[in-house]
Length: 149
Image (tube, rainbow, N blue to C red; front, side, top):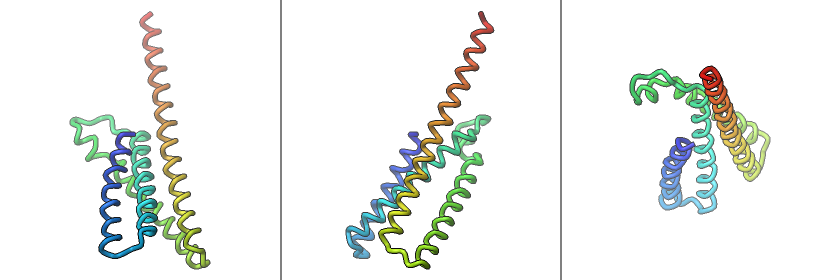
């Protein structure tokens, strides 16, 4: 979870800087900048949680040094492909919403709710997989200790 929090924090800093640019340079209204920042932060949280979920589901445990565990991990490619598929889904959703003349608040609320549910689902997945791994490790430890008795 620290990895997800760190990634969301660093992405949040970038979003904050971009928000200042939208506000000061481009002259966007404050309300619009806050919406951009909030939805951007929700996407950052979702991407970070999905990345951690992929790492928990498919850990790279056979590595020689620490950098190999990160740099030669297939989870990065999986995360990029998954995020691209999700963005394509949002593109299709926006095309549908605009073609059916949905109002802006409905579109923004739909995006915010769906990405929040995606992030919550990823966090729940991390918790479920972590607890399952803990139980599995505890069963192995108990089995080993029974054999020693």
